[in-house]
Image (cartoon, rainbow, N blue to C red):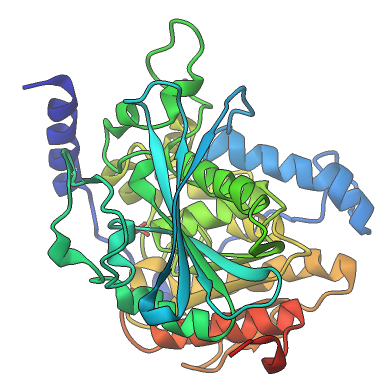
Length: 423
Ligand code: GCU
């Protein structure tokens, strides 16, 4: 068996064995104390936005890169951008652009396909939602013009079955987004690195290995870091596309791709809005709250996602020098939306809500209002202002209800009016 396949096989056996005896009993949640986002490492309080930006923000970013996601290399790298097509699509509703970002000069090296739908009727440049997709660009809409990119199953790269076109359309709501005057940009996350233990060999991380390096070192980035890096490379492209208003990029990610969205948004301030849809443990939800998924499961089932340092905190979550409210605070003062689903108990909806609440004091440094209550709202009762939250009925998913809330939020935060939509 070739090495890649052996690793993938081991990954599968590891996942099957991963522990999933999560706590779902609120009365068994242990008391915990969150690290203070507004106290510098030397004990001094942070009282203004300048001290946050100059001192505290870099400290917290450093904690997340050191202990959780790993360090994103700053370069050198060069990306060759190829605009492959620009055509009308979706019955005239959109202009479809397809762009390939070549991450390596080696033709066999990693490359990502960016699918961009722009509302056909638009004036000037349009705001855009950007997000990674799980199963290939062609699954986002039943549009025969979307190029089929090679998609990874757990261990093999395959040309997808054209029959899977549009099979994730419910999660993407392309026509709704376009109808509200927003463009949509998406990339298949496996283009940056296929998602299995051993997938590193096929992705972008080895492009940054030092001479002689064959494995990530303890503080190096994991796959989530690589996915987040790809989102920033999409922004590099969007900044140059005259149809896009690159000051109005709303980044949305679901689940593991919500973790990647939060980490991308924390590092790269070009994302104007960040939306976490059920990102759970290792994303928006508080690790110190022992409810739902824990680090033991995360690091056992997905050993390639985080930095190796994060594994040291398996079963020791309270020892982490930071928690997810501080990750959310790294988005400040930019608008942030955190969303949960009632049946997605593994993501710990209350832990996601409480992290959003506890990011609030950082937003207050700019006079921005956060969630505005520490009482968890009922189903379908969105709360908050610059930081917003909702929990809806149903399972782990992205639904039309979620998109309606994100579109309303983006309109509000970007100051858009119905008259901005060209029909
Ligand atoms: C698993 C994993 C979660 C992750 C989810 C997903 O359930 O345990 O942490 O968010 O997959 O990405 O769908």
